[in-house]
Length: 251
Image (cartoon, rainbow, N blue to C red; front, top):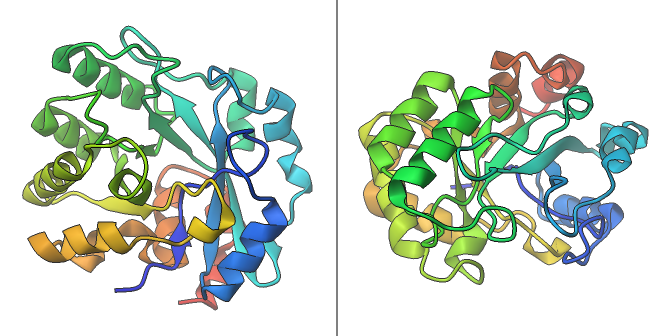
């Protein structure tokens, strides 16, 4: 199984990450990828870029050295009841948003509280992906969230870094979440959540879980650029039109 799009990465614009945009492009090309996404943290995180950073990404070409680049955000789910830290004026600059729990922003609480916050965040209509839900600090009611995600056309991320070096204890949860997604006939993205270019496009552990439970490749939406862009088009994102000709030549 080969995944040609990475939906989650951080550059040195987030100060706990260590690679530049150029280094990511070079790594994507070296690994034969089609597209990757810049998803720096939202404003509520202590080391998020200044809000101007997100608007000024218009200077970044859509395609560099044959690699397409998406300009997203990893937004923070806000306590106590959800919502996202995306200022209204920032929305038009974003190709998509990931909604995630982060301990500096949302103090872990009960399973009921987490479930409500996730669903309320999806109901804003401002996120297209739920990030690293396997974090054991944020248990939630799987069926409720996955049903809501399907109803609202929000994808669930299986975060490879959670299975290797981040958010210890996520492995069992990630597998259970993916089984629930499969039960409800819903869809996923696999992401590296890279904080250094070497990790871009690393999905080995996520793919292994998919193989273990027999999860169909057809429901991995970032398997290729055309499939992921079509999904963004379902959310009215202009990048789907902007890159339509390019993606047609990369099917």
